[in-house]
Figure 1 (cartoon, chains in turn cyan, blue):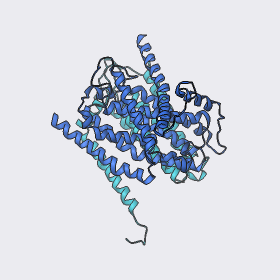
Figure 2 (figure 1 turned 90 degrees about the horizontal axis):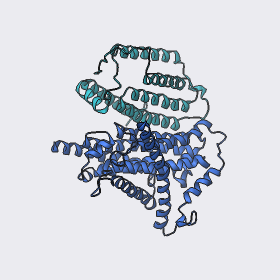
Figure 3 (figure 1 turned 90 degrees about the vertical axis):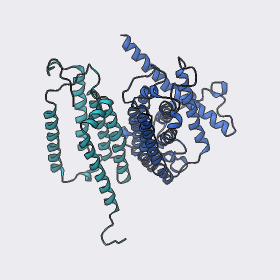
Figure 4 (figure 1 turned 60 degrees about the vertical axis):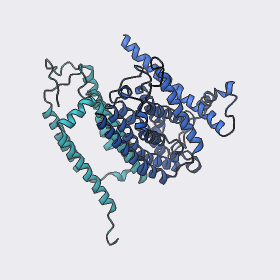
Length: 185
Length: 320
């Protein structure tokens, strides 16, 4: 990322309005995420996920990355959550609590989540230590800039990701076509 | 101060359009359907050709009791109409009507419009699930299946225009527009419009609300104002879809004459013609079955949209 170095280090002691908004939205997002994994009602969990993912989109907006924000809404809120709800409705989505939805893997899941969060926070912290986004100048996360950076500097990771997605797709097809034991074509 | 005033006036205008245009489309639907079926339609309310029929309907809806079924999930049930309606208001803000006349300039306007329109469908899903009614649940399921199938061709068709214009901003698309774009992008336009109709669950894609099989799908349990909000969302959706198709594929404010000052008239005119087509389709086409719906999306619209993208790419490279 190319981030312009501002003339003076802004510091944390006198936050601007955008920074305060960023923090507040972050708190809401975090809260929604926590509720979504702790609630006992399956469909409510999916709906809280909408709030969490939408909050994330607002955070992207505040960081001037407009394109990423709308893609976030389009893919996650518009498609992934709809797919989740579809799956829930198709299988079992009782109104009210589903006490049997808890699994014994909770501690392990918590450990994995904590490790993943720590790794992500560390990577972001390490990558952007002293860079600040200049909110006054032209948007640094606009569609044009994002596309240029993606396809000039990060083409290889981008392509690797698409291969990964392709592999997942092929895997899903193979799994869904698998015949049960003892059954022949 | 003038900046704040400017923004306030723009948002107020968008809000007024949001309140008025869906009602105009609704009243037009009453009348057009009636005349296509050889009858008169509403004639009494308000005097002249029943122009106030929808206002009277609104008063009727407001007087009805607001019922929430006993087993329903109260909060989700009550929230659903707002989730269905508000996204269309948001999209309307980003649609340019004439040069310089737009509620708010959005850099990635195409993605903004499509993303926010997709959120509106969540309202139907919430309503379908929270009603504790098997017909509602079936309607919700069909809504979700339909959205998943038609979101992709819609996005691909819009991407084709974005490629042609070299920008994803709605005003940018209009700035780059030339008349020969209409024949060039016509396949994409058809795919976009058809997929949009399916996303709005308008006939012939009204399987999710098919009244003769599952009563009214996700909205079966709704009464009074909340039901009216769902209906309003449908008509607001028609306005938004027609306006988006106009802007993306039909050149928005560009017209054969009257380019200065009359641009907004062209936008409105094209939107109105498309809205008429939407109504026309409702009167003349039978409902598609669920398997036909899926087949149309995956075996016709997606390949067509991909072919349009290929064509756009080839022409784009050729003229450069």
